[in-house]
Image (cartoon, rainbow, N blue to C red; front, side, top):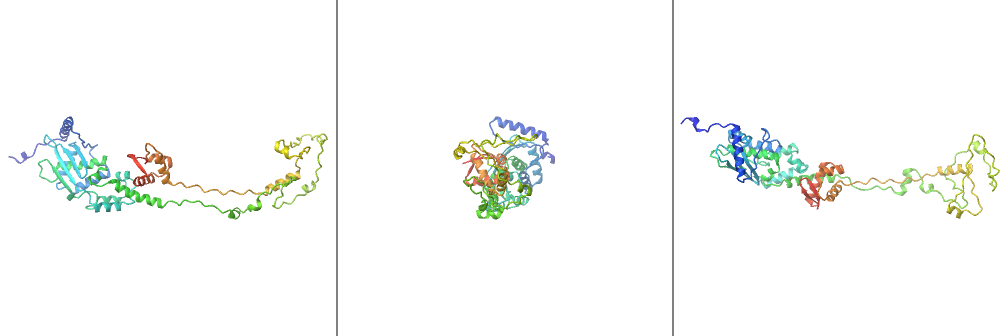
Length: 406
């Protein structure tokens, strides 16, 4: 037999894709629930978790040609089904045979000591669950996740393969296709990585966010008010409030004299100081006519209120104030300064209490963008407060990203 007769004939990528599509439809008609891996383009992984998984996969491949053929199988849609469960990955890969090959990959759970070390190293470095799953964390944290033996990704000793194909390699092309499919699936659901390693992502994020929230709460300004003592107001404003208070009006109706010194009067004012004549009942009839070109002087009308009629003796008339009385009254009022009221300092609002109040008031649940729109607080601080309140049981999660009161 010639050497080249030992290998099956070459099959194009289009033929492989068509064969896989026909087999997938057949299985679905028989009642099988399949979850195939479908790529958009030729790129297998686009997220940080998918790329890191594929790089870790290529580091322990025993035959490089199996790795390349596994990528080709995945791109042509040969992975008909892929399910990721705790420490187990199962898949169906359509090969050269009429029936698809069944692949089972078992991965050991992450060691408890390594998991505790990773949790302690992540304290205060992860902002939220969304940031962790999106791969938005410091670069040194990414190196900690991908380090050999003590990182999150499994080592060759922690992975066991099993495929129904007749290939004698420990990692055949079908196993490689399924492992690359895991990297593509992590783009859609990165939380499945923690399920596969047997650890809780909420436990990792909760500890890291709690450390960040505790640091934020410790840096809050201490609430309090600064009240100025009453005896210090005079020194602050330069006013003697006890002496500056207006005195009571005597019974005779004379306006109170001001304690402030008077300005020196001019000669013109001094020469016009005369004793005003007491008006008589017929003074209005003998009043001289006003000079042409000047409006007549307005006569003050008597107070007609009931209280004034009771205080005023019967038969008395109201005397209009003279120039001397007006000037003295203006000078007395000008010398009195009203005490300035002490302004209260603005009340500081606790952002944590404000966020919890909004979440508790929501009946159907509220998300972080809605809280940020109502309060103007940084979304990172809102997420930190929400995760801390979730761990303490103050609020509850309605659905992914929505929270309400307990």
